[in-house]
Length: 257
Ligand code: NAD
Image (cartoon, rainbow, N blue to C red; front, top):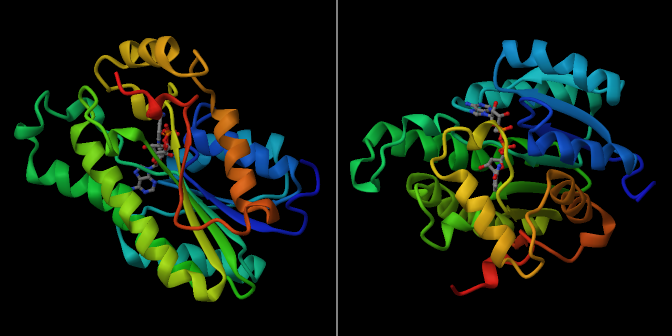
């Protein structure tokens, strides 16, 4: 993979710790030669994570970007642009994390929980794409993360599934609008991986065991496999692909039982 992303400048949004899928993606992109900037939800996460990042990926740029306001998204990308100039790619690996607060039943989802999961997980992609477009002078690529709970009913995933369905639809609409500027946008639909986002998901161990038992590859997947798929999508090798939902789940999504 070495050299596939030489000279490319990619912003990675959503590293919270070593388990984060965004961290595995960052490592794949770095090994392929990309220069990276990281955005964090808040100052505390930045303080905690940037030293970890710096030891493994030196010379990267770090800033805070809470995606709940357009102004903060605008400021963060303007700072990165002031520092770097052109931006070639964005990894959007962000979702609403307070899964432990979610009710057992979708019927009981509150307006606030519904709105917050759509706002943080889905609208943020639209706002980020709008902002970064002006800095992708030479075209670019955007990759976001989704899950098959958007397509099928999975235990306790409900409100997140609705947010991921809107996210996937947004990928298609954005692809159509960004394509003329040679900007590609795709989503990776990852199989279940234990991270901080899954901590509050009820029956997550059960979900993992079902995937291991029934997926065509008869195993779960790890974050590194998602990282390499993101590398493919960001590189010249993925140049003909946009608006796509690429499953990296050992094939579990094709199983009908
Ligand atoms: P994670 O907790 O490591 O990442 C979620 C990130 O979202 C964190 O870095 C958090 O700080 C960030 N975030 C939350 N609110 C934010 C805000 N207001 N502003 C900016 N950032 C904010 O967990 P993860 O599993 O690596 O999740 C990354 C993405 O992958 C999410 O979109 C998730 O839905 C998706 N995904 C995860 C799995 C899985 O099984 N872990 C499977 C498929 C898809």
